Image: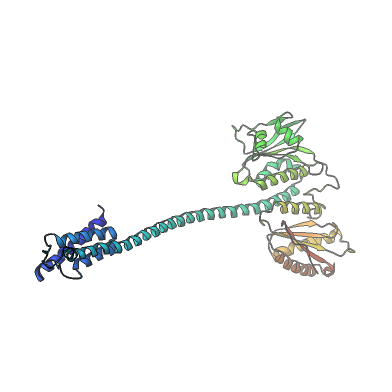
Length: 446
């Protein structure tokens, strides 16, 4: 018997006893047998409404027993048997019926309340689950934001690395390949192999431990040599077939190949890479890196070769238009949800104007001095398609509207600095987005 029924019995017994005490001391002591409605009826109604049908029926039976036990009146000569039964038992019958009906309403209310309570508890659990899911989503959002920020840092660091290599000279590329690879791919362990007489021999390693099982040579019969050198494939551990070929020797492997001549200089291999960093984009980045390094390592670039980091004029701090085109293509291919937002400002003089090297140097110096005053961002200078006259200024992390305003101020500054030497009012300025897959067309301002 639970607490609820104990409370119900105590209440019924107390109320019945109270009525009997009142009857004994203040009334005739016949337990209000002929009173209508009977005081016990109110007790039955109270219990039925408060607890339900079962408790109401029990209280009705207990009240009936209290009423009739030793208190049944005698049948008179004028009463028939049925009249006697009715006069004696009609009130208990009313109590029983009322307790069942009113108690049924209470039971239905209790049942609906239990259902609502279950739904409420379920809703609370759902809220808790959703709250935890939101926390996980927030953590994931922050991770993705960090990843996007890392993408932006990667693109900028790749560009800056290219500038550094251009500054130190191609002869030092061999000594910096692994540092470049680690900086671009965020890899923990990497190595590169030089191709010498049909053998891939490890030239240098970065991050290797003494007990690492990585091989230092691969002959022409090995599957890795066959796929990377002869078939010029990029192998990724995410591909089951490539995983068998790699055989625990790394996570990514590809040929260091010149993109135009398709000459292979060796193999670049990444042995350790963060799981979240190993995706489709990182594989494309690795592929471009192999081609990029192959371009840098070409000892005999032809005049038509689209080399990436070549200073077109040693007296001017300009990078080639080929480098600008390839860098734009690379950023467009790998730009992750707009991680890199940059604009190029292209100064275009009239076709009949030829700029001397001295005048080009003065224009570049004027631009170099004006840009930090206007915005303060790092800028990079490229030669245009017309190498003797066009200038391209690339500014990172600005919008096209900002670039348009800067171009207007830039032209004013150039006119003030170089007044009398050249008429900048004849120049046109083209604004073009860099690194956007759906970049808007160039807009020309006078």
